[in-house]
Image (cartoon, rainbow, N blue to C red; front, top):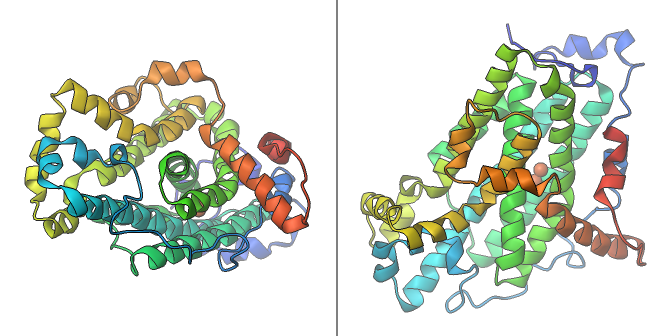
Length: 377
Ligand SMILES: [Fe+2]
Ligand SMILES: [Fe+2]
């Protein structure tokens, strides 16, 4: 028997193979309106990765001589070993292969989000929630196409999914429990994505990559809000035992995502390609952690975990039980003082203003995500 933790009727859920519940006649007349605004907002931020008027993947970039991302986004280059080993064009090639690895992980994450939102349609019982999930699946599908197109244009092929990320995505997609799907995907993976996209948008050297980040964020900002609405309507009503289940799952996902990003074992083929042994790189990371200056630079490269940590903190999911797991990488007091505004939202709003111009042929003025999603809150 699957244990669903349902505190609000609009997140009521059944087992994935329980189609009989979907055609109960009494079910059809109850439909939440909570997601209607998010669903209709999809027309404001429509974009098509196959149409060059939105994004042109044929725009060239000098891959041999130009790094796609700055060095401070590559944690390994903050270690003495890798820093001294790679010079000149090999260094550029390394940075660009790390970028390929990160973008490939994002592509696999987008496929995970597509498969997961499709799976939500099978378990969520409310039609409004189902329509939200189906709409998200459609948006994730264009992200898969967009990231695959970008990787294709720059490298020809993505890299394989790291084993840790693969098992986490598999667990979420196949989980029958709605809380696992929403906390894991909508809050953590989407939160990590918003942090990573915001960083890449600000710092990437390739204009096509920056534009890709912004267009994707116009959709992700809404996906992230869906997770927040679930948390607002669920977390305050959890019993202590249920809260522990949700909090532990969040901590487990966080540790897995962090491990995937910084553990050299996950990218050992990449290191081998540059004549580096992943175990030596691992030792170099540990050494760098004892050096204040190198550690400070490494902390900057894990800055992308801020958004997701903040989401969990604001949602009341993190308590003293698991606080230390996050505090090692993110300054929790600083986060608390920042309030609830999200770094990615302003970038997404600007992206939607661009899309409205393309979609409607005229300037529609300032866009507000909060207005667009307000009915739900
Ligand atoms: Fe996505
Ligand atoms: Fe998403």
